[in-house]
Amino acid sequence: MTLLLLVRHALTDATGKRLSGSTPGVHLSEEGRRQARELAERLAGLRLTEVLSSPLERCRETALAIAERHGLPVVTVPELEEVGYGEWTGHSIARVSRTRLWRQLHQAPSSVRFPGGETLAEAQRRAVGALEEAAARSPRGVVVVVTHADIIRLALAHYAGVHLDLFQRLTVSPASVSAVALGDRIPRVLRVNDTGSLQDLVGRERPGPTHGRSRRPKGRAEGRA
Image (cartoon, rainbow, N blue to C red; front, side, top):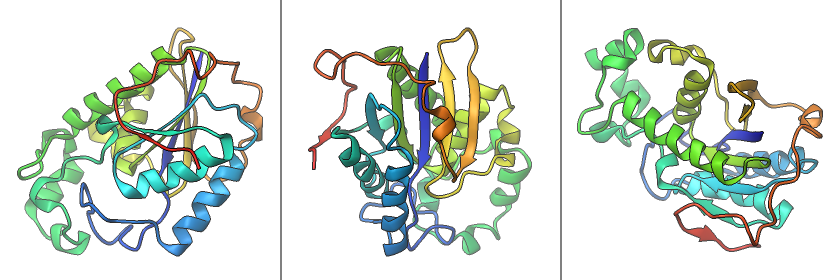
């Protein structure tokens, strides 16, 4: 059984205000750095196999705080990047919320393609594919995946069997942990949007392969700190 810990990046100055999307140079705020350190402590009791991250800085910075605590590298995985919002990237939520497409997005999200961007179904497929590859590499391990709110909600909807049009009923807060177990006949969603103790997950994980023998995903590894 693989335990996937789906972590939303910690706070930035734009969180909740702007669709940062794939905008480069969006870093954690001071509060976000504090959240990342606290998150690393919350995960300290688990024996991690890998730490994977979206390529964007806010995710890598959150992932590095966790990886440093465990002496692991952070491996960036392009398929874990934020939803491709296209022309909406960088716009304020107040601005896009006045559009007809925004209303459609909340009524029937599966029917929407972001202007010049991707559909939610496309984002879901690439993210779930990356998670399945991670589980295959660590069939008895614990894998931390640091990514974005919509990517996590789409993944949780997939594993819970929730239709894409209902995925926005799931809440995923900054620095929260959602847990999914794979490999035990059916996927099992163990946590959603958890910001408290994870101690009851200690012992669910089993020793994975040694780091020297485990296969690494395609992507760029951040150095250990």
